[in-house]
Length: 560
Image (cartoon, rainbow, N blue to C red; front, side, top):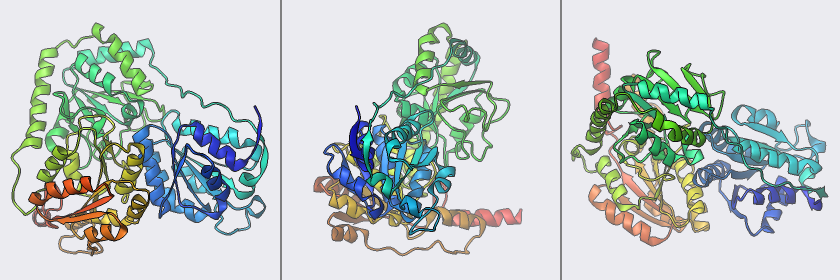
């Protein structure tokens, strides 16, 4: 039934029908009418951030935590440029997101109006679709299409431009129902071919990615792995795709992956890739996999199959639909050498567990491996962990054991400044769960202003800030290539604990493992957004190397 409403009211009604209850923005004069329409909508809570980049990270984190599209808004060219980092993150992470950008009056277009940017050209390379709406009557059609595209196939970001005159106009419009997103399933012949290849393999492995997470297919993944005696590895920053404590979990493929895990991949004769891209990180610079390995690639995006490696079998399907079909037919295709396969899995699991559970190195005042073990012990199993980019991630990626789905949120594009705002978005999605963000001092300072946003909206997340007074990842590369020639990587920092208190939150400073448990417990009990500044040694530049190690390695290389 048609109803007279403004374009802005139609935009907000489309958001409401999608079940999105948190919208993130930095307010702008170009879309005041949308802000006013949200004011009139009880089901939607507006979160006004301090920077558009922070708002977009919050929306992206909210989307990952809810499986709903994240929604963020900004004004014209300058606001859009600021939030573009979140659009890029959503694109590489396959996260559904709809971005609404105010735009100059239609009569001013192409005259280089105030803050005018051709937003369709600007965002086209980093989004699934971008559109500027020029007719108020078409707002329901195009906004609902935006949500449909963001959620369909390989999910991703869509950018919608809203000229001020178009959203302010009042016309009769009709808004359709939210559609069910199609979930393509594999054909019977494809399932049979896949199971035949898997049953004949001697040392197969399965690598599970974001498609499994997005489809909520954790249970069929476990069932299929157990039925076919398949070991599972998680792709880059998809740690919670499979329970890490499971006897068939063999680790995470990403940055700084231990050699024994890489050896597991290299010695596999069959690779079953489910819902993942063969990215530069997963493939270790496109060098990890060989043409001698048979490959089955299952992905909802036909463009992903064969993009990097030509598989023996490519299946275009939703990860959940594919895994359910494989489970259903698996009884007919049991492995020919199941015992030998299980023995191999057991040995590879032993090597993985040895790396995880080896006696802790107690050298130094603060041991990061022990801190991560303590963090796991102090948080409930359903706690959500978010992280920024930086070398501190190595300890999280390698030693924290994710036991339940929906407990990890991180950027596969390595965006700095992501961890804390994403935690805010996740906590708003799940207010009754503990949410902890991990950041380095370099990344945290990029979106530190969003701590005020968390205080203002009473979002009690806990930020662990690992402070070594430098851009650690870049310093690592710098020392590896140009030892002792430090250029641009040193930092100075404020007292983060005091800063948290000045913002109205809770803060503590620690520099030893003995202080962590009490500080973390007090932060939890405070009920406030909290910062725990963790002073770490600059010398321990990564999980596996010190700065001195890198310098010595370069000297030896030059001598060789």
